[in-house]
Image (tube, rainbow, N blue to C red; front, side, top):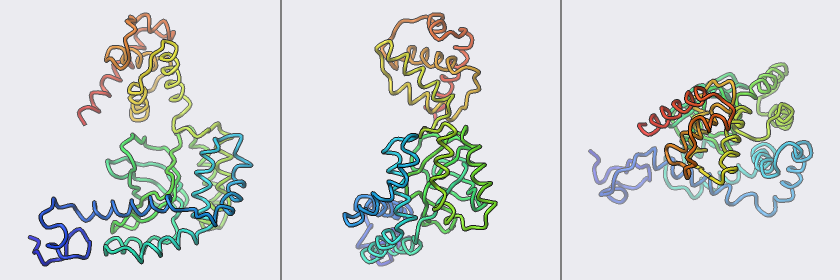
Length: 330
């Protein structure tokens, strides 16, 4: 039982009667996480300052020159901005944290901020996906960490990810949160990461220094392997493209169907020989479950349109039904 004169369990430093008494009691973890998220968002809202734009533009140009033919300008600038903050001009982040420490009141948040020195790169491979955290193998430092999830979108095991991280406030120092853009790479890029990690293992350098000097090299290797910034494999992109093309050709649209198929592909990893079989099953599902205005096509007509057998179509149609039921019951 919390006494009215006891310290409030939300961690504000105030007495309970002056803080959360009479309110629906939040946990310390929830309150702390919300405040830390506000602090992180304020960093990207306020920086870079006008006086730092010249340095950033010059730095971003170094990234655009080798990568502009492979990636969108928006994507390159997002990656370059994180690298600028956390590898090139670490003084910007350090100054921001010092300012936050001066104006933060909640002791539990101050305790976390004191651990927020320079963010560290995480180049990892997903081992397990839980509701709140991803278990990730840090490939450059040979350790396993827990990374706080940013959304409920499915994340398949074995995909690689890249971000800058900070301690998330848990007692375990290997429990982290992403401070930068969190980028996932489809499994068909795994060989590129294997090669990059092998190259790192052959030099006697700190992982952070290595990433600072060779991050552009990794992005060039990914581009050479066909990566263009997509989170899906070539096969998965093929399925989604065929569904989208069919809908467009028939003057229909259904974001709901496309989102469902995205999640189905990622979570279920259907083992189809041809992407058209899954696409055909998706169109039958969308029609029969009213996810777009009906075309009144028979199963045979859909199968003929995609040049697959009705049995192949139905296999994935039934798989999508089961997956959709599972999502509804979760």
